[in-house]
Image (cartoon, rainbow, N blue to C red):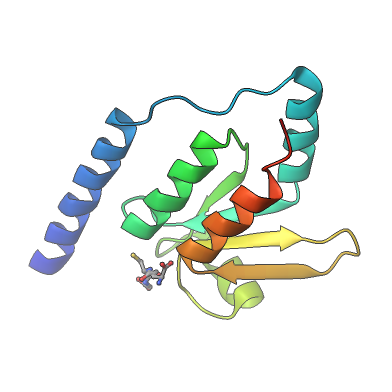
Amino acid sequence: MLVKFIRNALGLVIVIGDVLTRWSRVKRSPDAQEATDKACQSMALYHFFGCPFCVKVRRTIYKLNLPINKKSASEGSQYRHELIAGGGKVQVPCLRIQNPDGSEQWMYESKQINAYLRERFANYQ
Ligand SMILES: N[C@@H](CCC(=O)N[C@@H](CS)C(=O)NCC(=O)O)C(=O)O
């Protein structure tokens, strides 16, 4: 109970710190942003609100100006079941990527997700 409270309080502090230190985000031409928006429709981020690893990925998503759908995987959420069914475990952040051939990739690890997003959207300017 106390541990949960401390964890939630710390999470809130991290989220507030994140929001207060978000500077500029990538600006694209209307055509490039449209292509970006379309590409993002094939992705979803499973996350917890106060998880520091999720904050790290959400910051990258914000900076790269990516309208990726965010799904809370907290206890009791329907998306938690989606995450387990698709990815195989409850660990966040997890990026679901739908490939053009219909197959899905469930990418865990904040470092890998950030590297993937930076590389994939580097040329969407
Ligand atoms: N190495 C992972 C760590 C991710 C991690 O530890 N996430 C925690 C939340 S902060 C988690 O999913 N825990 C499972 C749970 O709480 O059920 C990363 O960088 O993404």
